[in-house]
Length: 564
Ligand code: ADP
Ligand code: ZN
Image (cartoon, rainbow, N blue to C red; front, top):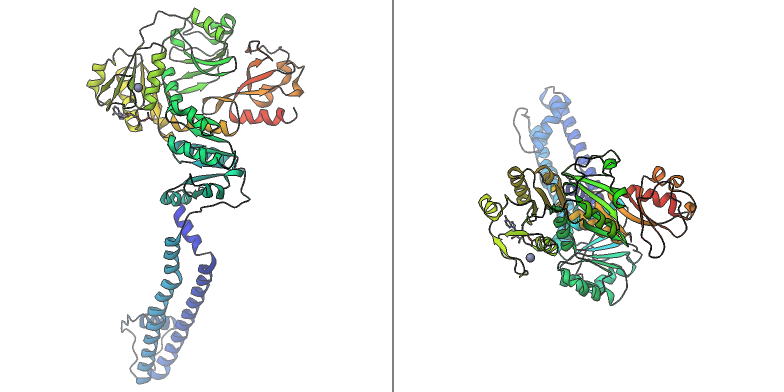
């Protein structure tokens, strides 16, 4: 309910405030007039007509007469009484029926309408403005980013070239400027040169143009989204410091989680030689065992740093049971992952994944599967004109008949990636009913639909908005972070000097901050020490790779980084 509050505020400012005082004075004047007439009424009735009435009857008579209603229940029968009645009616007409409405219109209504018509959103920022994040293009991703920036008290401004959008966002309480993002004067006026970071989240050509324009006068860091992954280099060339091919990232996230093939662990990300990968428990001999019984670290050197099960991420303990539906998040070197592949069951080679939706995300999921020789079927209502490589089954994916014909009964995994969340929820629910044990991963275009998709039965939901916002936020904060899920990051930090020479147990990192050490990186090219035991001594020059929530990461910064 922002609007009424804003409108109300209008009457408390400047000229409108003075007018409001005038109105109060005028009402007081009317009140005095009514009181005087009421008193005169009782006196005249008594003296001219010999009738006695109360003062309140006088007030009633005055109001009825001034407003020209004149019910006639109390009337004078003498000439002076008639003259008095006429006087009261006339002053009612002038002061109540003409001047009051006129005053209301000219002092309040007209200025208010005028201010609404004259309203222009801000087109520049004060020259003192600095260290702000400038966001071009407001959508679900930058909305999620803006929420993060607000919660961190980071100054930001959203740029839009659409005046209606500017007004709407301003009414939502957001900080907006209105102007053309490729106009140098405008960019200078919103203090791009003093900004902390620029986020370009428009189309690829517009983002390119923004980068080039900004680079013509300053070197503020720019992070840009890229729709077509092949254009990443082009955007870098135009001056972007980071070009993020979000759709490709989302496609691989979806695909890597949809396949149940055990022969490979799916590499999510890397910190130098330390790889973070995911693997379905189902394809390992560890099904049903506790983490302690599985002895994964002893056999391979890998650390199990997380477990996903039906959309819930937990940091496992020794007693955590490895259920067949769970997905392990592993940290380790390439060799260690290979060692795990050696001991996993490779017979289950008949994976088939269905991809519903052949947009950019669906296409990039298909490419991921293709690179790993995993068979897949793509269904889409229309042909993807930008992709010549994938044969698409044309039809509506909500048709049960079409899904059956395309082989959903044989599929082990399903990727639901249309651009419509209601369709995605429907497809997830229908497929879950039909195939209770199939691995279903779904994309959520709007953050608010994540829960519904899980409720519909998805094993895994990837939210475009929160993945995009997290990647951008990490870029803005200059953090080298791997985003596992909302609320859990894997991040790198140099060993604080105060901890040199202590063992991990003595360092008290976990009790003091809540973060756990995933691995230690040694200087030069030696392999990282994955899941180091508590007695390991921390030596100068070591790097830490930790897992924790953003708050725990902040704790780490406060407790250790400052005095390191
Ligand atoms: P993105 O590029 O983000 O993946 P797109 O909008 O390009 O998003 O892709 C979504 C794809 O999903 C489109 O190709 C669209 O035709 C497809 N789609 C949407 N609804 C259905 C449906 N009911 N059945 C099949 N395909 C669908
Ligand atoms: Zn394709």
